[in-house]
Length: 175
Image (tube, rainbow, N blue to C red; front, top):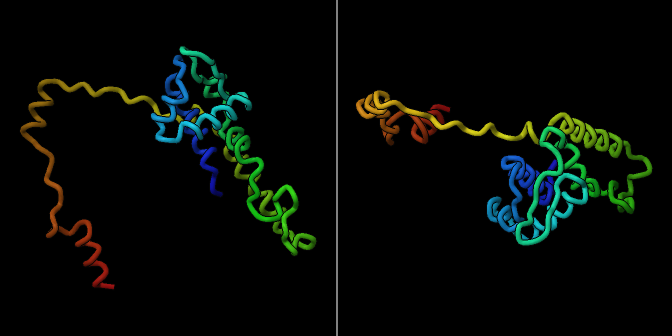
């Protein structure tokens, strides 16, 4: 199942907000940070706000923040909020579509069940589940830095080695 760009933007915006929960982020900042259109993201944030996933504050010191903790936001609920009106096939359209097989078709039920299974699977995960643990800085001692300088990493394989394209070409010639 392919998700809408707005669903993708919504999930990424929520993840970004969850990574900095104590800060109001402007839509402009989020758009730059996520490398998406500010205009499109503004619409997405409005939809997230309407659905109760985020809170917005207007003004010079305003911005967007999560309306509830990441562990209380189900991924399935977010995806449903953005995808609910999307017809995965013709007969799922609001007007019933133009499929001539609809009266005798059983595929609609099969696809509807599959779609609900997809959403049901996503309901098993929260926004908190989708966040990476923040990386901890690695502290090196002076001894380990000296050891690393004396024992550099081995060079990358060159064109004559049995790795990469040369290995694939060798396998292909044996086939």
